[in-house]
Structures are given as structure tokens and as C-alpha cells.
Length: 230
Ligand code: APR
Figure 1 (spheres, rainbow, N blue to C red):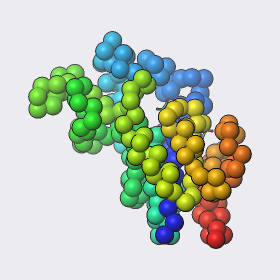
Figure 2 (tube, rainbow, N blue to C red; figure 1 turned 180 degrees about the horizontal axis):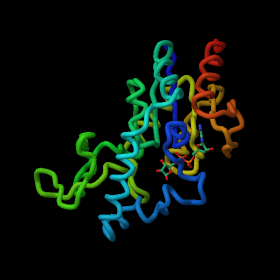
Figure 3 (tube, protein in one colour; figure 1 turned 90 degrees about the horizontal axis):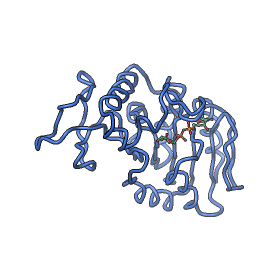
């Protein structure tokens, strides 16, 4: 089976009711990203940061995967599909995708401030992290999220997946944030690249097949186009 790598961003989950980052005047759910998504913010006002992510987690529990997520899961019938997502939601998994690599962490997991590489599941029945919640060694828990200014440990694995791919699909990302945006550098020349987005996305690559549509409609069109590939 051909290897299909899909890079997804916030637009993938927009039709599930989750806000994108750069479609609303630099505000994200009424917050400036730097107020809530940096290690400095967590040191300065941990309660604000925990509250923000607790709200995001509670919101996620009310959301469902959209037809785009389900369409990608269905492509596993014909392709060896690897999803590389910048999203911290679990909608790809809930739609049935088997291989999902989260570049920026996962909302439904926590980790200790001393060991950000070891995630713990957050049970949906107790979705909040509180000040005073600790791991077994007494270290405060924090969201398992890669904040701005932090290393992106999964990037090497993501690069390998792109290098080994036969087809690349990009869905719902403005390609503004590195290192994720740089993954397209690793796509071999001559290899098909599809990009699904209702708006124009700036990229230096001229060999991209644009599908100007939202994620649900775009994945439907993509599925048809893939049938025509040799
Ligand atoms: N379907 C597909 N794409 C959509 C839809 C939709 N229904 N609605 C909007 N989009 C597109 C927008 O046109 C835009 O190109 O999704 C893209 C979202 O871009 P951003 O908001 O910049 O999100 P993303 O690229 O995922 O951001 C990357 O930035 O703040 C950080 O860590 C955060 O992972 C995030 C990273």
C-alpha cells in the first residue's frame, strides 16, 4: 500500500466547533497566545493557564469528529495513512485513525513540570488539572502541551514519516508555525502534494494541488482524486 502522510492544523477541527488560531485578530478564544501558551505564562500565573486549558478540555469533550476526520480514517482501507497533527484535540483518534502523531501535545493528557516527556491520561470524568495535583514524586502537573519556546520532541519522527511517504496531504494549517511548517521541505520532488483549505495558504512550493474547500468537503474531493492516481 502507498504511504499517505497527512499534516493537519486547526482548520481540520474547525467544523467540529474548535476555533482556529489565526482567523480572529490574534486572539485565541479571547486570549493572547503568549498569555497562556508559554512556560513563562505558567510560571507567572499558573491558575490562569490551568483554567484556560481546563476550559479547552471541557469544550473538547462536547465536540465530535467531523466528516473530514472520518474521511481520513476511511482512507486506511486503501493507504497506509500516517497523520501528523499540530492539533491537541483527540478527534482523529475518535474518528478511528490508527496512526496519529501529535506534534504539539495532547489536551487529554498531563505531565509533571519536571518531566514533560511522560504523559498521563486525564479521565474525561475529572477533566481539570488543579494547583496541587502532582505526580507520584510530588511534582506539580501541567498540560501535556508543547508551548511556544519549548522543544518539539516529535519533529524528528515526523520528518522521517514525510521522507518515507509517497503522497502528502496538508489540511487546515496556515503553515505559520515552525518546525511543523518546515515539514514540506522533506517532500521529494515529483511526489503528489494536496492542500485543503478554504483560504489561500502561502507556501513557496509551486507543485501543490490546492483543494479550496473546508475539511469535510475537501477530504471528500481528495478521496476521489486519489482514486485517479497511478
Ligand atoms: N477546513 C479547513 N481549513 C480551515 C477551515 C475549515 N473548515 N476553516 C479555517 N481553515 C484554515 C484557515 O484558512 C487557516 O489556513 O485553517 C488554517 C488555520 O490556521 P491557524 O489558525 O494558523 O492554525 P495552525 O496552522 O494549526 O496553527 C499552528 O499555532 O498557535 C499555534 O500551537 C498552535 O498548533 C498551533 C499552531
